[in-house]
Image 1 (tube, rainbow, N blue to C red):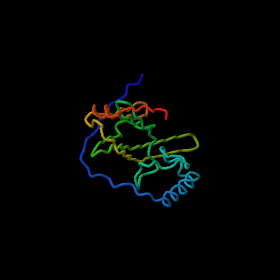
Image 2 (image 1 turned 90 degrees about the horizontal axis):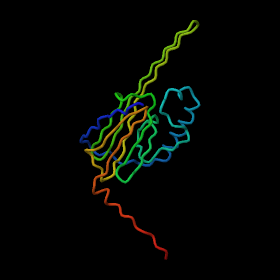
Image 3 (image 1 turned 90 degrees about the vertical axis):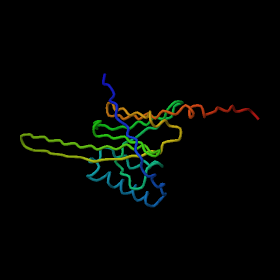
Length: 176
């Protein structure tokens, strides 16, 4: 059984990012470019590339790379959890930061493959970096945010404060 490795979460002060501006024709062009790229030679170079038919989620910012890892975001009674798939990555190449209500995950991947056979020589290198940021809801206890990495999956747990856990009130629905 492989143990999960704890990663440090850095708390920093930084300026608040500007809100995302919706530009439908720019997004359409990016999707068309991505579709043509997927049929070209460059498709194998991006290990985190999404398919051409994926839509850009609302939390992506202008200028973000299409090579960001896929994530799942879940909410429980006591915490929020972000799970990111990062196959082939190592924990030393990951960084998790929390500043001014924004959680940022950064990573860099470098891979080199060399194969020598009797009648050919193959040398391939691929590398790239990504950064993904998430606006964290109010009520998260910033001092207790934890990140762990196991089997190529990064899990960031953001516990809710006691006040935030009590804030939700269930309202019963009555027949009219």
